[in-house]
Length: 169
Image (tube, rainbow, N blue to C red):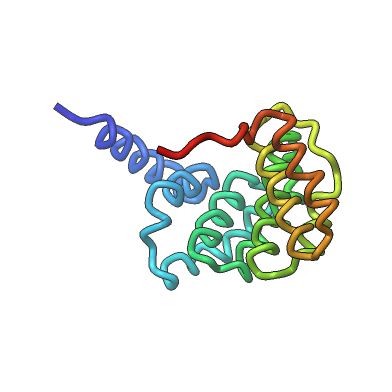
């Protein structure tokens, strides 16, 4: 018998034979194997970012791999390319902005991170609202805006993300 993973691999290989240059097929391969690629192997996909500049899925997948490899100098421009790719569902737009803001935060660029999060998130995705409020609070705290940071953290509490203090066992 063939496992589900093996079956998916067979289907993907067949798709790669039929549509070797299709951005969705390439994105799928990247999302499956990209995190195990060397820097040199992954670098071969960068020229495709220009070729597939309208493919949000490809750009986002590649940006995420570089983010996980702590390569902000590459992931941030790729995330910005996602914003201009023409794919603009509210939650994906918000997700991209939060990823950019997170990269800026870890680089110590707190003002730039806050700039990415200027709008209040009305998104239905509770996880995105949580990430937004937490990252906003952290940036404000690092910039010594303690009162504003407290308000951001209070928003987490008010929305039920942070619960009352529990006793440790």
